[in-house]
Image (cartoon, rainbow, N blue to C red; front, side):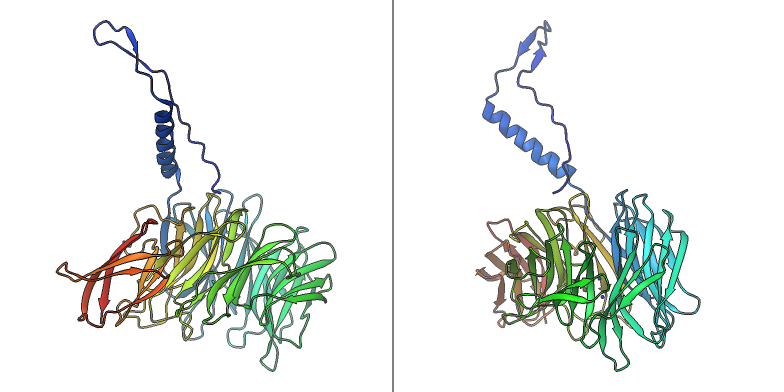
Length: 516
């Protein structure tokens, strides 16, 4: 399961400029420039330079011969990106993993295949050392039974060559699942997730290994209860904090992994859940909010204490008849304490979450430290997109990872990795291969469809819709006063229509809508 840094653009301004006369070359001063005009000029220059200095966005599609899904994304000290992906072959063949390296323009630099000759293998977490080496954490297991599990750790160099491999077998008769891993400050390692018991129940587990990858201890702290450990943090020398889902709890464990205390996550946060710590006591949490109905809405919490939930901030962004769902592994991140990126999948299929036969979008929003929204944008709509990872980047932007399933004409369940890099304003800000894949502040769906629904991004509380037929005749004009609107189109014949959505807040969207 797992502000923009200052760009110092020098501006040279003169308030006393001289030129030479065209005849005698005698210096002659310009007329004095009013101070307010100078200020206006400087503002215009700074605005243009800021736009020029703004990092470019990009999109990259990684295709493979088999079905693949990204597991983790990390940025190294050279502004390059590592992506690990799980390969899921057809016919129950052995699983294996890929590790990709991309530059800061989204270009593929290198990749490596990591597999086991006898068992399936899954690399699920990555870590970067201070000397820019890469750790890959994973597990191997029998393909059919999912048992006979060994924990794995690989050390790779800049060219993705394996320098060192470590393996540690753990309770071979049990089936472990939902692996995640992280390094501790003392060079020890924690692996956590869930284990399936003989009666097909699953319960949370945690394992600790030393720097030589010897198993120090492992535990199922509450083997009688369901659960998966999605995150772990060492609070001090005597205790750990854990995020558990199924049920959704914060837990405090001692160094022997006995549960000392716990609290229920407030405000009915459910679904895929991930967090980002900002200091030793507080963190942000994203999840699915189930109440009030309708559920399946993205929600955020700012937690000021590891488990004391009596004081916290809570935001749920939108109630809709479609499903906004958090990413599989990581859905919230930050580089600056007042610039938080979060997101998920818009219009996810609950019947078939990984291979939906419907259009979906990545939805990303940015907030300040108190969860006040700055902007919200949508990306996609031309295939089934599923967000798996969201990573704030050092240039002030954000890298979104997920899968794209092109269901039209699909003859097999085969996904490709889709990576989208946006700047600090959520914009792609560059020419990309697919013109239809742009940052949207309003989306129309279903498309094609018999009815017309419109979702406005939350920074636009109203908008005007104009709908034209192919001859250019205005057939619908309506003022929208809600984030979600259903437009009456029963009087329109089937065909292709052009829409325009505008608002004083800067909204200016247009495109095609097909009525079936």
